[in-house]
Length: 170
Image (cartoon, rainbow, N blue to C red; front, top):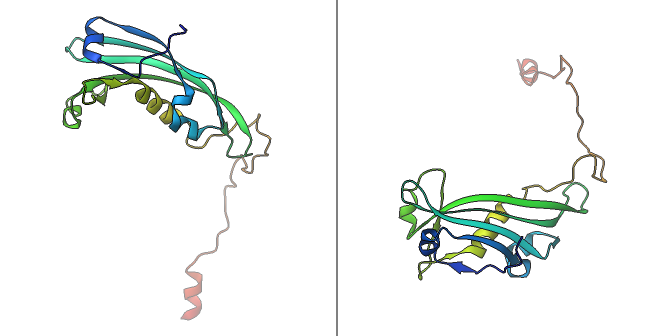
């Protein structure tokens, strides 16, 4: 990865016409929402973004981002290291109404008042979505014994009939 600090915002139209490939990093200290979700983080997020124009003439921002974070295991309450790695494909739109007109394989990103895209927020949003809903170690790595049982249920289960009480009332 290049040791290039990425710009926070960029004009996607000018970048796509030049077929720009942006490769570098964002400092974790600037990603406040991600800092709030993890115990500890790596120093930076590695990012590669390709700007292009597709066959329909749409501007496309596609790329990958990755970093390592420490999350709290919900089984044993101990921190564990987890790699966040995301791939994305966006197409810029001027407003929310235009987002419905995009093909399904692109997500919409709304341009700011200057006609630019906030790359840092875009990458941070994707990383936040990739965090597991219930983070936990692999079962063999977790210090807590699993409290669930695995196996086969018996063929016949003896359950009392709830309507047997009504027979006694007759």
